Length: 482
Ligand code: SF4
Image (cartoon, rainbow, N blue to C red):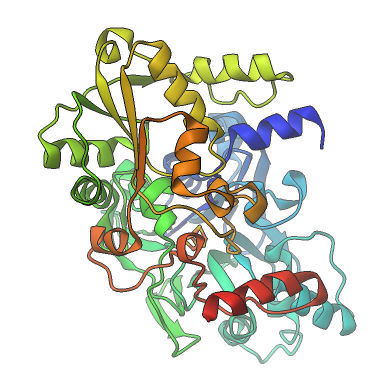
């Protein structure tokens, strides 16, 4: 691995998922799609795209970088029509390289072109790829998106087969976590996996246009009302008839990825009916109940830990303070080549406020510990700024298992809690004490009875499937079932 790749992995120890947005029925479709994607930018910053149609041809613009870099007033004008879908990309989520994965991807077919904006990861992709290749399919990319498109196309050559049936059949063959949009010249299909691992919500603008988004924060920005979530195992067809619902599976669970609440989603989003800020604040309260400590101030690591820190402070009565400040203008520091430059990069992103933490016993609330390197640096920052004690409280359980559903949480070898005890992790990061939230309290934070917590407890909600290359995953899965 090159040093810049190494730096990049170390700095970005927990990665966002992708975000999808779609709109049907607006004269301003591509502009609204742009604003929707902008609100979802936190879910992926490596590439983005929008496809629009006036009825037949699907026109698209996409490229690497942020929504603001790829789109401008001029090029958006060329995306005409009342239907648009878009995506912001984080590459590892769908597999493959950035350039080949930037979406939406447009697929050509005799029965009509279609485009896909995808968020997720299939666990049986290699099996299905082999099955299709044996039937003569050729793949240009390694993405799940192309695999799903090929499954949809496989028997759609028979013109009498409605596309919805091809989609339902395809979705019955795939296993894993996904929430994606398919756009044709006439409609949008919004699809969600039967385990409910990925979020997808439906909203409506005042002019009657329908919108679909990975997170409800995108609705606020464009002035849309939240209508409901797309159900696990459901396909919504959105066209001039309005909304029609089909269920491709009667098996259905609400195993939402708990990392959406802990880290990924914006605090102003509601995921599966639960506001993300409210969830995090409650997790902070429960964290205090499970592991209180005498201290002078409570601080949170910006941005995703602030709600939990507020909850911890409220429950404890210890004042909440802004002991760490994040620079708004340093988007990426991972290209810096050396260890010393990397450390400077962390300081560029995050500063300890000496006048607040100096001479104080500090409770530092963070959302998670992945490799431990970032926590170690932040503890050191606080101590160098004069904190007399730093007690680290993590608003999630210890991360001990990798994710197979598109979240790049690292391999098991890189997860510090998979190798070290809590006391050993405490020693490594240099904290005076360390405690994690329990899985029971995490579930209680959202008042939920189901949720994927596999990266904490190893209980994966899907089969992990088996090919030779996946055999280690299967063995681990079986071990976790015991
Ligand atoms: S394994 Fe972890 S990161 Fe992956 S879907 Fe489950 S909770 Fe989310």
